[in-house]
Length: 158
Image 1 (cartoon, rainbow, N blue to C red):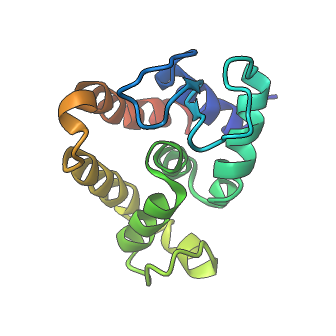
Image 2 (image 1 turned 90 degrees about the vertical axis):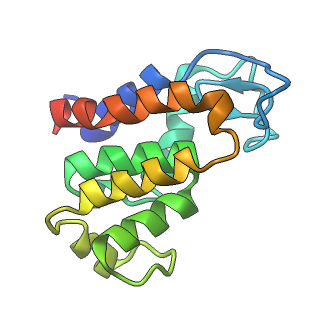
């Protein structure tokens, strides 16, 4: 039986690539979206898909408490945490839910995640933030495709 994390991971991996070592990428050597900058002790070149999945589950899905959110929102939050950082994803979620942006996913944040319009507000905040990033001119086309596709992909598994 496939669970929500497995489905969200499949969506994520569909947007992340295989091994690359691009001197223009501030993350450095990267595979499956796992960068040497974020994981300096990981052998990126030899990283397996299962190892990447374990990192994503422990450091992003579980840390963001995605199992506590409505499925559609969980996918959006997970992808944002991976692509933009746990701190940014937490802040956007709290602002979208109208709760204090204290950086802690607690009962108030979880309860607010079930409010009408939170997913749309969350995604809009993310799009706005990304289009204002200084690296948008170099990576914006790919990010725009990801941001446009993600709600449809999330809807298909929710």
